[in-house]
Image 1 (cartoon, rainbow over the protein chains, first blue to last red):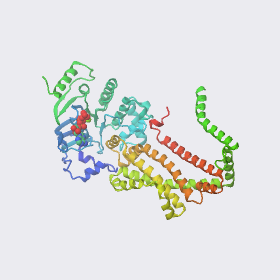
Image 2 (cartoon, rainbow over the protein chains, first blue to last red):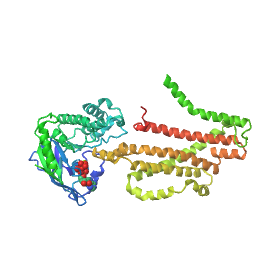
Image 3 (cartoon, each protein chain N blue to C red):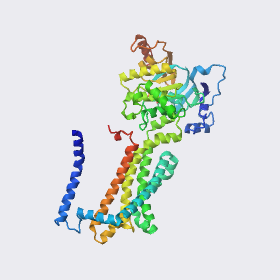
Image 4 (cartoon, rainbow over the protein chains, first blue to last red):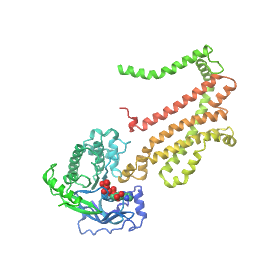
Length: 288
Length: 259
Ligand SMILES: Nc1ncnc2c1ncn2[C@@H]1O[C@H](COP(=O)(O)OP(=O)(O)OP(=O)(O)O)[C@@H](O)[C@H]1O
Ligand SMILES: [Mg+2]
């Protein structure tokens, strides 16, 4: 694992075909839309930092969605991001996963040993390829990392972790919504990401499936020790799962605090309820 | 056992009506209810079929027509596919050619027959040109539509997972566009036969359409009816083939999953 800046990430480490984004980055002078950050001196131990935002802003036209965000997330942390609809949570994740570039500021994150992309995102929809069997869909997560028999083996292993080993040869259309989302989770995890960004992945599930998925997510996170960034509308979900919760409001981090509770956490315990109340107060202007 | 019997019955019932029609037709022809110079009896058509089969004329004409249909289809279809893919994938290519192609599309291709005869006479090129032109548009339009309707969320997913452009094309875009391309394919097969019938009837010296026109001149109404039936059969055959191909490649599609 090594820490390098995002604009180095796009230099292909292997002789692979250049992606559109990579070419766009190469052809754009550094500093124009993605200011160059000099690699940090090796004296401080950056290995423990999964990613950090330094003065990151994102504007759409003259509308500032993210305003000068500073955020350091240690490796292995489970961080939850909450905020009102339209406050820029998805934008934050898109920046993190390289789907979007900041208007200003810098973003550094951990890459694989060969500079390969080890950041994964899970969307609200499963986004499975309808024309690929379940196992093949999971193998998409190994693009550029493993192929053939090796990829098949890895994808079957992760499928059994999410409890779908027996569905490997089926089409996505025959699975239920919760099962499809589990396949999407398997696809995101199969390459052992360093960072897993989750954009309300459980939003569309019913309450019971949702709790089941929360447990699954928590146990896999505990085994695999990746950094999890969970965007959610559900404050209870945030405090139940995360080590740390940040609240985004008006483009800034309005609240940032740790949840030092033991795991496994019991749904509906008084500590969780108290923390939940505190966050809701902040979100709705604080009536304390 | 009961269910298989029922399914035979169900499949069988579809053929009941055609069989009845043929029977009534035969009786009507034999009793003189239908004059023989209006319509040939089914038995007369069968006889003509046997006669022409033995003389080798039928096989030769079917061969000629099929070869024309398929080569015209291959030319027009592949050009349509290439333009459809190019315009679906590249905005530049679309801006450059789409308006022109849409304008040409509004000309009914059969309206070009007089011009085509002037250019090519009644040579093979005339038929190839017309078939290719007729086949081009359904393939082009549906390929373009198919690519444009590929779920952008899936494309974004492919990007996040680091797919290269070629991988993205073969794993996400092409399979997503395939159902629409098949719609175009089946439509194009229909147009292919239609164009060929018209072209062979008007300007040819061999082929099924030519055979029918010759028969008309000698008042061989059984041969005329036979040609029409064979056209129908060939059309059906092509469509079944396309359906088979569709079922094989679109197995993932809920519409093609047999429980
Ligand atoms: N490509 C874009 N062009 C213009 N405006 C955009 C674009 N993407 C996002 N926005 C705007 O940025 C703001 C934040 O959007 P974002 O999707 O990040 O919100 P969110 O916090 O994820 O909301 P939700 O909880 O509803 O998903 C919104 O006002 C949105 O309209
Ligand atoms: Mg969002």
